[in-house]
Amino acid sequence: MASGNAEDEFETVDYGMTPTVFQRVQYYVLALLPMVIPILMYVRIFGMNVTGSVVTLALGILASAGVLSAAYHNITYTKRVQLMRKSEEPTKSAFGKGNVKDYENAVSSYHDQVKRTAIFYSVFYNNLLFILVAIVSGSYFLKGKIGLEMEFIMSNLLGSGFAFWNSLNALKLLE
Image (cartoon, rainbow, N blue to C red; front, side, top):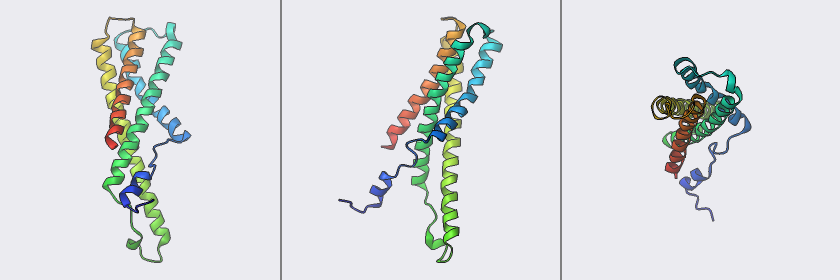
């Protein structure tokens, strides 16, 4: 039996919890971009030779990007829910009786702005976590312990894994 409570209605709205195929591809492409920084660090600073192990490095990069893209989605979702809870979409009464089109445009614009803000925040936040952990782990914790190629893969996986773990904790805080 529905109680009619506005808070109950709010909890049943998806707000993008399940990503579309387009969103998954978008997150994955965005996750490939910060992988350039560890590549440059390992090739230019540490002198890693990529010609002998291109396939292994590519698989490591693709795996790290996959984990980071999942973190993007989780943080985008949590930020979107937070923004929706803190703000209100435009009301019909603000537009009068004859301005249905203006009202629909305002609501659409509001949702687009919330979505863009959440995605921007998520990409910036997760990239920051990824880059910091990848650089610190590659420069200090893993340095000289295993081969350069494995250090590169492990530092990337540690960075993206930390961002993903953090995003799971953010999801738990929503409940």
